[in-house]
Length: 271
Image (tube, rainbow, N blue to C red; front, top):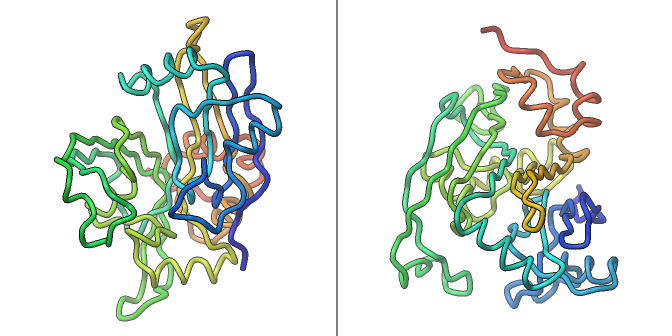
């Protein structure tokens, strides 16, 4: 069984910005909470570009996908203003337990978590802030249950767009609606996580930052940054029984090459 931490790849680079496809398992920067880690996205980019880079947002360690950084402080501030003003459209691909509604939103305030504190004390020191997540179900699967007493188990692939940027927002919101992400050791279900890890031979958080849409902070032109989902998602989609409800949206988020590879093995759901 593998725990992914592949080599990052560059998605976009100009004189002001750089975007990478962050693999799962790679920290954005050094953290006392993961003292054992020796590789970091920030240091990889600095070494690769031979210059300073400036973070403007973050992805959790287990999340893969588009990670954007600025190449100078002024650009970093301009990008930060876009994120703070909720002008950046973020789209994620997630594998969750159960079948959420075909589309909907989670409007549930979240407190800032102190990750260094004991879990029972997390979030108690700050007031809850507004948090909104919109989602659409792209595909669903019902298979023989890995766990008693139910004869079958249900899972779904979701397109997720957080409208705010709270800590662990997608993971906490899907836990709140009783559809936790697969592979989430903090908010998910360990027995389902272990079953999928053993079945696919991959232990990871099934959350991928597939796309960022924003305006270039200098030219003002629209900019779309897309990160292919990677081979683990092809393995997941090769599982028999997937019913695809929105094939075009799913294949766009998976990435062109991956979509072409998996399309023949996936059946579309009837209307």
